[in-house]
Image 1 (tube, one colour):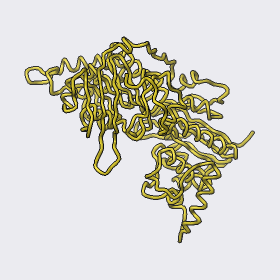
Image 2 (cartoon, rainbow, N blue to C red; image 1 turned 45 degrees about the vertical axis):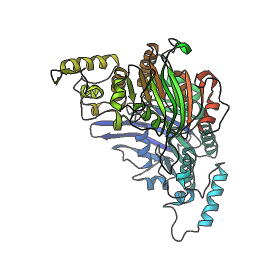
Image 3 (cartoon, one colour; image 1 turned 90 degrees about the horizontal axis):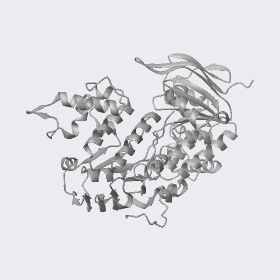
Image 4 (tube, rainbow, N blue to C red; image 1 turned 180 degrees about the vertical axis):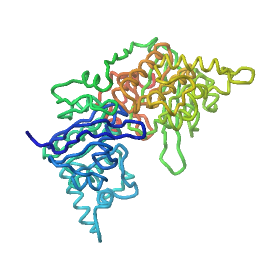
Length: 510
C-alpha cells in the first residue's frame, strides 16, 4: 500500500465553544488533486490553515511520508514543501511581480537582472503570461493569482493548497488554472483544491473530501460519485430547485426602471461608470455579470442614491429620481440588498426586529402615538422568520449572533418589503451555503412572478444564467453589451468579462 504524501489523523480545532474541526482524518497522495468540498463554515479552510501552520490543532497529528511532523508556523510548512494560496491575495501592490515573488526569500545584495530572468523562465515553464517587471497594482486579478502561484513554485512547493481559487476569475482564466493544476500534479506534485462549486470538483479532482459542520461527511473517488450525491453530503438533504417561468408579461410589460447615459467620474481618474443605459420591465430580472470591481457596486449606489452621478438620468415608473435623496428613493419603493451585509446591510448589535425596521424608522408604519409599536414590529418580524426560514430564537435575537446565511435572509425579508417597485440585489448569495442560496432564489423568483422589477448583480455565472431574463456584462465601468440569456454561453460571457468587445446583439435596451 502506497504511503500517503501527507496524512491528517484525528485533528480537532476549537474556537472558544465553537467546534471548527472535529476528529478530521484523511490523506493526500503524491500526484493527486484532492478537492475539499463543503459549505462556508464547514471547516475546510480551518483544517488547511492547520496544515499550513496558520492555526495549531488542539488534538490530532500530521504525518508526512508516514512520519509525524510538527507544523507550528507557515515557515515550518514551507520547509516541508507546503504552500497555500488564500482567497485574499497577499501581494504588495506597489512592488513589481519579481519583487513580490522574491520578497522574504532572497538575502544579501539582490541581482535584479538575474531575478527577472529567473522569474521569466519560471513563468514560461508553466505557460504563464506574466509581465515580471510590471507593478502588481497594474495587473488584473487573474494575473495576480498567477503571481501568487509563481511565489509558491519559486519555493519549490510540492503540495499546493488553493482556497476558492476561481472566485475572482473569468471562465477562461478558470480553465487556464485547471490546466495548470493538471500539469502540476502530472509531475508528482499534489494540490488541495478548496471549493464549494460542484462543477469544478467534477472537472479537476481525483478524490473528494466532503465536509459538513466541521466533520468529514464523505471521502469519495470522482468516478464513484456525482453532483447530486455531493450536494446531499454537503447539506444533509436533497434540494428542490426553484423553477423560472416565462414571466408575467415579458416584452409588453411596463418599464419600471430606466437608466440613461449614467456616468460617474472624478477629476484626473478613470470613470467609475461610463455612459450606462438600460431599462428593466415589470416582472423582469435584469442581470449584471462581471468580475468584482468593474463598477457594479457604483451602479447600484447611483440607483439607490448614495452616489451622485456626474451625468445621466435615472427614472422610476416615468418619474425622474436622479435628484432624490436615499430616503426619498426608499419611499418610492426601491429595496437594496448590498454586497457587504456587515458594512451596509445591518447593525449587528441590534435585534432582528430593530434591523427589520431600519429602512422605515422615519415613517408611520411602526409608529404608535410617537412610540414604536413593538407588538406590531415583533409580529411582522416573527412572520418573516417563519416565511424566510430564518434560524433565530425570535425577534429579540441579536443580529450579530446569527449565521451569515440567516443575516442575509433578514436583509432580504426587509428589502422585499421595502422594495415594492424595484429590488436591487448585489451578490445576494455570496458566501452562503446551498440551502440558503436555494431559499433566496425561490424568494426572488416569487417576487418576479408577482411583477416586481429586479436588478441582480452576481459574479456566479450559474446564478446569472439560471435567474436572469436579460444580461449585461460589465468591464471597467462600461457595459460590453446587453443580451437575452439564451444568446450567451460561458465562453462568450467570459470573453466579454475580460473586455473583448463583440457585436452588440439585438436585445439591447428594448
